[in-house]
Amino acid sequence: MEYVYAALLLHKLNQPVNEDNVKKVVSAAGATPDDIQVKALVSALGEVNIDEALKNAAQAQVTAAAAPAAAAGAGAAPAAKPKEDEKQEEKKEEQALEGLSSLFG
Image (cartoon, rainbow, N blue to C red):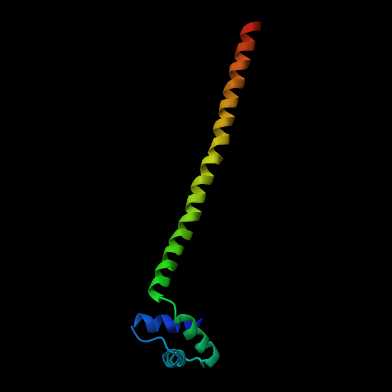
């Protein structure tokens, strides 16, 4: 994870994301850089537009955060309906009983 953070930091500072710079950042943070992981990261990021990837990640977070709120809102409406249905059923029963009592009244 520290390698990704190093790459993001270099990108933010408009520095080239290359092996030497990533190693320097990781070393400055107090870790010992692993050459294989550094090479893999730099190679993987070689064809990635970091600005576009960050933009898409931010949109995904907004969408993910909005989904539970929408689900909670949708879940509240069905929960209210049974109570309304119960009240309507009770009214119908009361009306039916009133009708029966008037027959025998």
